[in-house]
Image 1 (cartoon, one colour):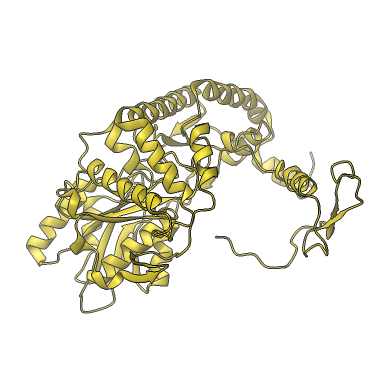
Image 2 (cartoon, helix red, strand yellow; image 1 turned 60 degrees about the vertical axis):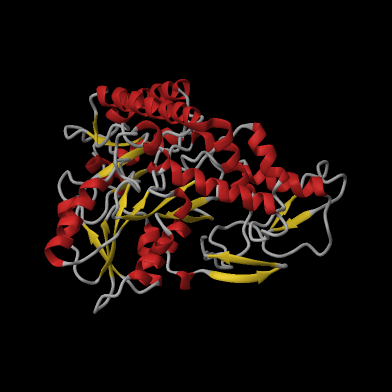
Length: 456
């Protein structure tokens, strides 16, 4: 959740006029930083908010976000029917609680738990909360002599750095180097010691969509335990990949088939295909989640075990997740995710063939890929491309990689359910359309000189 101050950053008036026709003939001036003294008609309030929201980007054209931007009307209807249900009121909404339990069972089966009946898990508000819970379990199980540390690649999502700061764990971030953009087995063990509470392996890096080699990391940690006696568990951050790999890469061993994998999280609102916000975290067996972390609350007439950072939260997304599992099944998810990967690899291939870009990844793991300008290109950079595409409504982020590869600036495209081959071809056409103008613009040095007042 973003933090906001009361300070107004933009030079906007402190109130807004509402269309008098929309306001049913009332002369209204809507305040933006304080409450109205009296109520306004519902239609007028709706119109006021609706009009300002038109300034947001089009979610379907947002190729920056991993979060689901389209669901079937039936799913949206179910969510509307459950908008008033609090997930924490399990005695009052027992069937919603049952759907949550079924989803945990489905994920345990999907992730090849050795004994699904022994798995323990919960829904969360998203992967960030799920990762916090997994990290807390790792720290509580650890019993080293010094300050606890957590080993992970510099490409991890910021929630892991938050966890380390909030729970006083040393973050051991393995930097990127050269063309190595994520954690490897060799680097993971090099950063471990007797105070390492765990290693985080990311199944689907947000920087380039690549999978980290979970099996290799586990194998290296097996060897480390044999040599040094350190039994270091692995958490798989499968925010995106844990809902891709089971359907498209069934032969890839990354999940509970590896005994060292203690816990896995995923985002239901990413490739679980649910609107935000819902996440999931599972532990391979109950011993991996220390009992002292579980609260048993006598709330509204029932003894309720809970392990969460939040208390009240919406139940609609859990219902929608169960709807998707019921509606799609394995074959449906395979088709949806396969289409996304096919669109991503089609896009990356065509962009690579343009000759002015260099691919960092190809979208053949997560349906996500990154690319940068080719070395000979000097007239424009990835930030220029991002700005020009936004003029057509496309939201394609440009950003630099983390420390030690901050010299590498890329564009990243996330392909989600609902982004079709037709939309991909429209994006390619717009990209090709802006390239001649970008190539003809003045060299960046000349643009900088002009901005400083120097002219030919």
